[in-house]
Image (cartoon, rainbow, N blue to C red; front, side, top):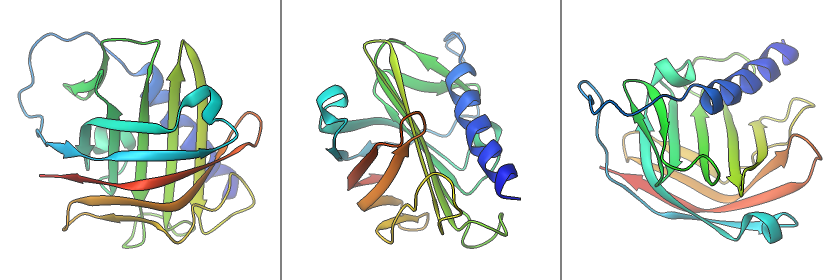
Length: 178
């Protein structure tokens, strides 16, 4: 089962990276949310990634992209969702964070997970975490929470691991939407 969850997280990341399309101007049916907030990064990779991610766009409960309605997709300003596809204005820089909360159902093994890809100058940095810790990735930590009713995602000492080299990155901040 652990390998199935790990494969699901990897597949979700790959789908988000490669599931992009062109903007045809047709945004019918897409829910539009205003997002606010920044995520502060700390750890060894900040020399490459910087110390802050500014969320420009958000998708909530988009099962077509994430496979679950218990998810929030946080996007940099230059990435948007049109007709359930990611649209990139600049594919050399940006980020996609998929935060999921299964604590109310959806997964027998994990309560919460993060799958994150940051692209900086064309280079991809992939990170992930699960809670509880299941012997892969790293534990997200108790400070990671999604409040769908309160319309917020909180990262408070939340840890994610680089899936290529096991470097830990810590995330802090609160993202809200209306």
